Amino acid sequence: MTVTSPAFDTLLARYTAVRGRSLALAAPLSPEDCAAQSMPDASPTKWHLAHTTWFFETFVLEAHEPGFQPFAPAFRVLFNSYYNGVGTKHPRPQRGLLTRPSLDEVLAYRANVDARMARLWPTVAHDDALRGLIELGLQHEQQHQELMLTDILHLLSCNPLFPAYAKVSDAVAPEPAGELAWHSFDGGLTDIGHAGSGFAFDNEGPRHRVYLHPYALASRLVTQAEYLAFVEAGGYRNPLLWLAEGWDWRAAQGLEQPLYWHRIDGAWHHFTLAGLQPLQGNQPVVHLSYYEADAYARWVGARLPTEAEWEHAAAQGAAGMAQWHGAAWQWTQSSYAPYPGFRVADGAVGEYNGKFMVNQYVLRGSSSATPPGHERLTYRNFFPATARWQFTGIRLARDLG
Image 1 (cartoon, rainbow, N blue to C red):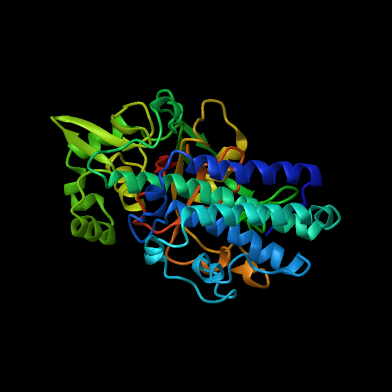
Image 2 (cartoon, rainbow, N blue to C red):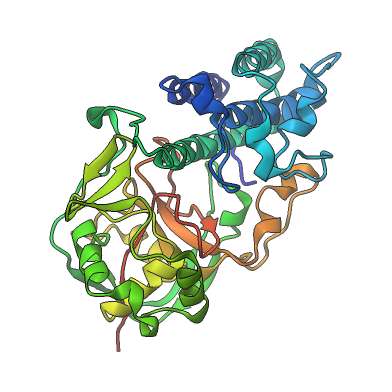
């Protein structure tokens, strides 16, 4: 990872705030809510709370705590996600079967690790590398905070009562944007990727030079009303708009509209963290797969941007361009692959990003569910083309010249 070790006082405050926010996100849920798993790609809230704690115990305390003893040896297996270098893992699709340990035991685990971390702070104050590792753990927990919300939303969507996670006034929702306009960019040689101070995941660098052909980007994201026109025009039934694999996937799943959309008594609704709500035409459409995003772009005579185009345009801060961050993760047509000169870090922490660089697409920006302050210009999120349960949307692009 690229980490400039944060100041000790700043890191201590961040640790307290980030760890507290995870508990706050879980607070509206019942123990039953926290234990359930709605699909293999999602995880129970209880598991997220435990796994983010496991990260600090495994990667920080085990190496730096005098006389280290694990809180519970079995947790090393139960709450390991994908770190093969650490050891055996409990199967991801079976996380919802972990009725034990209880939620109370997981909360006790969090409290225990936080107390042990507090005793470690005098050492942290004088160790740049250790502060960098703790910052990585906090960034990791912030990623899981967004996953907690997306996984809770999917879980509650499976309930025919359509229960709300939060009141409408408290629900996560981006600000609507204005009329769509096109902004042109000259292209040419430009540098992308992280460089300099501040935290960045290893997949955000090294900074390197790319060539861009002239292009245009939409000033904002595609709205629910605009995507509804695609649905009602038969976009989900026209194979000419879809990539071959996307069409086969759509047909096999029987998809006719975005995830969480429901037509009730002739009116369209979508399921949100605030429960079932009427579509809001000026809000960005979200919960789209890459295949759906690509098909819509073809339908309107456009395409998805490359990640280099997205970063180049966002870095310029052009007037009239909106919703770079805080609305939806934006699909790009760029495959998730290493930048030139990328090197995987030594040890288990090196498994964080590099081994997933296959069969996935890059998303840029951040969503309404992304924790405040977790977004960056160079952030490279990634998911397979079929992923729909994240807050993923569309910014259109066009070729010029």
